[in-house]
Image (cartoon, rainbow, N blue to C red; front, top):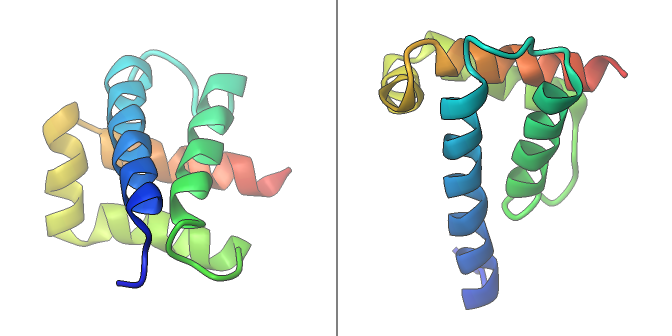
Length: 97
């Protein structure tokens, strides 16, 4: 939707990186660790390809939706059980700064 090929390609790369990091970090590294916050920063970079302006509450709300909406939860938890909740917790740790 109005994205360039470069933006689309970057979004695909970031999405893959996020899923790979979720597989590695979920259940092994605390969400408020540097690695967890870096994951949330990566997620923010992905979001900014679609959002015109960054908003902390909206980012947190998206994390909540990943856990509360079964479709999103199933998508992230397919990578590794608990990934949706872990990503949400990383986002909250990142946005507290």
